[in-house]
Length: 257
Image (cartoon, rainbow, N blue to C red):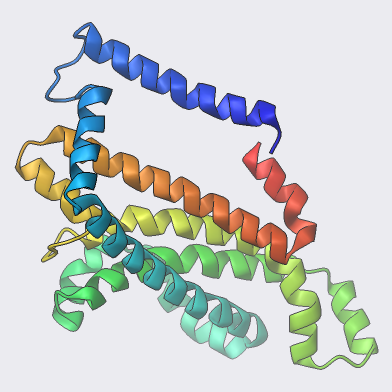
């Protein structure tokens, strides 16, 4: 990443931090509604020193990682199956479209009845939030594959699996990467909702517990941590995609611009 881009990023966050500090310094907002950066930093240090921040972050990261991995591992094969079988697509597509319109949090009562109030229910909500961006991204990428390339593969005697592995998957990767990135963001968005019910650990639990205690500084601390981890994981995902598929590097560079 060029130095100028680093500077622009620092200036962007620095400007927001300066405006935040100025608004609290001159009393434009109620300190209870928007604590000062110094107070939020003090809360972060307190949470770090007593181990609460580490414990809650690790619990949330484990839930997001497991739910995201399961959603991706289900969505990609299912998208390929939909593209290969008209019968499967005709039968299952209306059902999936129906489920896609329902917010994952609206299914929380059912998930609690079916999966209990433990980790399975929380991971289930994250899976529902992550599944469709990857599924639709993969399907869109497959639909955009140049048919001439597939015809060339057939002429060369490629099997169906070889065509999928050597032609379809590389051609569909740009759309799939977009779905993976959107899905990763949705996983952190669903996290707070997933940890609302019967949870005793996690960043979402920490935020809602701080709300009940009127600790706005801890609420903001949790939000900042989630945002920072989300930015870091998105960056790592883009780097991993650029390393595994070098031909995607220009598109990912544009995404960072």
